[in-house]
Amino acid sequence: MAVRRVSPGARPAAVLGLTVVAAALFAAVFRFGPPGRLDFFALFSIAAGLASGSAFAVDTDYAGRLAADLRSGLPGKAAAGLASAAVLYGLFAVGRALSRLLLPFAAAEIGRVYALKSGVPAVRIVLLVGLVIGPAEEIFWRGFVQERMAGMTGRTRGLLLTSLLYAAVHVASGNVMLVLAAAVCGLFWGSLYLRFRSPVLNVVSHTIWDLAVLVIFPF
View 1 (cartoon, helix red, strand yellow):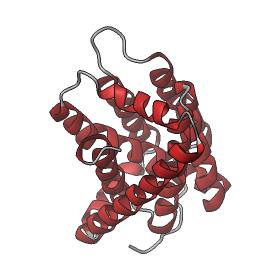
View 2 (cartoon, rainbow, N blue to C red):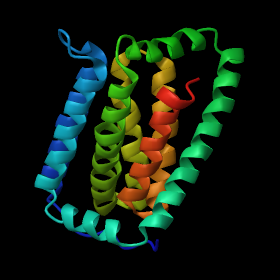
View 3 (tube, helix red, strand yellow):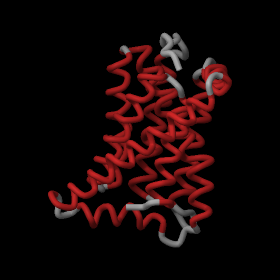
């Protein structure tokens, strides 16, 4: 899993344009929620799918990079993704305990996050998170946005800018705990990408962590 140089990739204007539009779309999902009978996970899957699909259209090198990533050291990347998800889960377990002691509103706001699952069958959540949301978010945020921000501003600045934007779109939810969680996750997965530059590794980490906190071992 050697670190490679950032490739030139797509035009900066196209990258920035898609990033702004996609960020606004994600923020709208958090702010307004699903219309009618469409649940949050279905709506978020649509938004994430559109964002990640558009990334391949804007960045014509991306499909080739992703295919090469899949062909190289897949078992090791899967293992590293699983291990990193376990580490992140442990960090959140500690953070949850501390937040409940220090922040009076923490329990209620964590409860609001889990309320999104209300009325949604667990199998539906597993399928949407495992096949769409987890993969699409990493394909877009780290494999596209961070990759291209790194090419324009440098690798460390690319990590920080992407993490800041990733957290910022969650502000629209009005949930402080969700924003803090997104900030931690953004820095964690961004650092993972900075180290290995593997969308596949990040997809495994993000997807396993999502499934753990939402379905398997919820807080």
